[in-house]
Length: 236
Image 1 (spheres, rainbow, N blue to C red):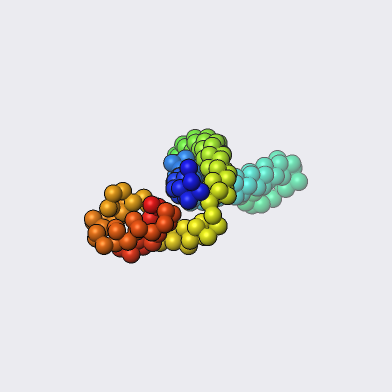
Image 2 (cartoon, rainbow, N blue to C red; image 1 turned 45 degrees about the vertical axis):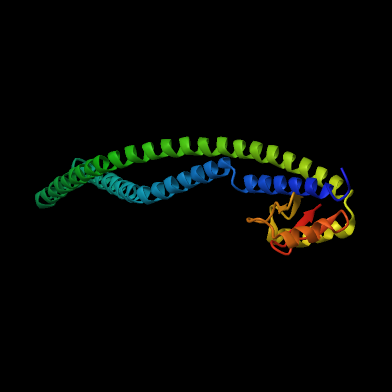
């Protein structure tokens, strides 16, 4: 292959490298990981939102349990005082008895409310348990997706590095002026900056090349020519 013809190899390798870079940016494993991470984030937000009411109810339950304990302690203390013999007056003994009855009633009311709260908390706790299980499963999917993405990226990068190395070796065989011209035009004419002249047809032109232009190129010294129709480099 002539030095100029090596431009076709360089172009082919550039196209392959471009496809690999696109693949790297659009790996299905990347989308799978993004979807898994989005699911974990959604479940985290839902857990936070749903856990608030449960925590509030549990705080209220603990407060009422503390209050019920204090009320019972006070009732027990009054009960001991009632039977201690330290109080002799009948009216005072009756007052103590009424206070004990009131305290026991209050404790019972608190117990009833605590039970209601426990019944309210139970379905919330069950729902949260289900969400945590979903979150754990989603986290596992995310971990596996992370590993799969790393493997796919490594394989694609290895292939890209091989192609880039081969491209560097091929480009070294191309005359610097021709390579510079190719690299200047490539951004606008990618992926077919360099084409061949086949008969009277430039492979880069969508239509038949005018015969005058074809004759002009054919009579040039063998090498690269600019196609006046499509602007590509024509190898002839």
